[in-house]
Image 1 (cartoon, helix red, strand yellow):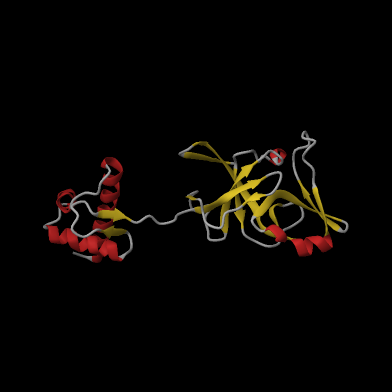
Image 2 (tube, one colour):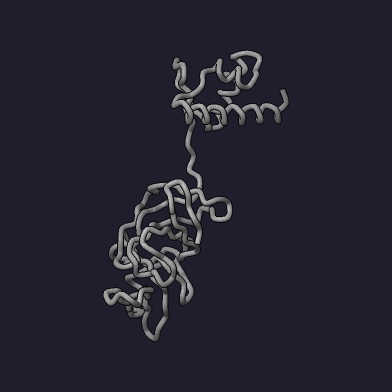
Length: 215
């Protein structure tokens, strides 16, 4: 059997294993895999299963009839918590979820935050939306950023970065709410007390649990 055919067989085998688990709640048996893939003997199945396990795609529990377990890999962009479009809110150190948005929006330098609050609605960012952030510690005037106070690094706020004479203005976007006000920080305090954790590069919204829509 050629390497190409072996790889194709393993991909088909992995697809069958994952599909069986999804449909009936257990992995297929060796005999079931042999029949499905038309392999000559159980030993052929065992060989391919060992190769899949060696590749880190499955784990095999010894002496168990349905002991094949798929190994989930992190795909997509990590959801690192919630951010307030008003007052600062907690960001998690570890991902709460991984969201696969396809190859167009992917990369090690990206993360996602769920928005809480309405202070950025005039920029089309609503409560419950998700913002995709590119990690960087600098930005341009007018960009929407994640700003964190150095004295409280577990909290962050989502605002538009505006430069004024002698200060930085973190500008909200909801002129109809009198309780939503810009944060003005003198340059000397900004340099010592604040840092930028990234800029917003995209927004998406979940209309249903299983579907997303880009903005």
